[in-house]
Length: 259
Image (cartoon, rainbow, N blue to C red; front, side, top):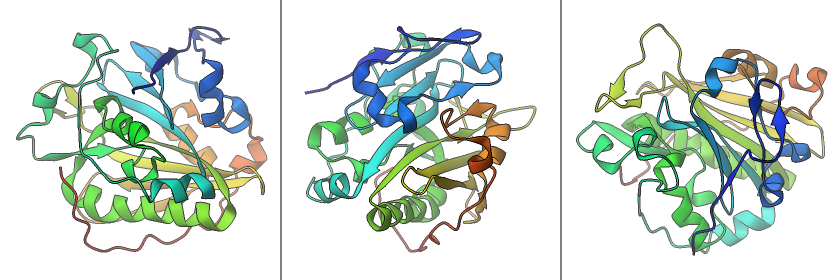
């Protein structure tokens, strides 16, 4: 059954409350959750801890701001045996006025894009949790089904090669005017996925525009953090986050997914 815990109740960070349950610490590198460096981003935020991932949800954008996973070679082996069962659902633990609803996405023209992918989930219950709209953003259909699916696959490939990665995925909202679906849910301008290898103490990030042109860039984690105003890996040294490592090239091909 669903294993959901609200966190950010135990540990105070500068300028805001941010805490996590012991069960949630395993999702974060060095057992340290991301920290906001721009206080305005913390408005109406709630942290949620799931079986295989944790996230920070914004009641302003009605999307996650970041979603953290610990991927291992063993967890991905288990995930391959879990049959996909689509079951998108509103996150009932969030205040109704601050959460996305299924009708927000209906006839919007956008896919319901997972941040922690369903294919990463090592159990059926974890996969069910990944279909919570708290883990979803409005994603351009071709981006979701082709490029982003390839980036997710490249991340799993990298995990299989290295054995263990910490991964943080989320939206970027840039510009003076952010569009919304149903006048409620913010549409990201870009999407990011940052990966950190604790064994080699190195990492980098993919950033893709939320468009149909299948373009992306690989950047240093530090550069991504400056754009986000979020310290994604507080326990990782600045000189490590300043370096860019080579990430696997996403293999672009047609992916069939339900929107």
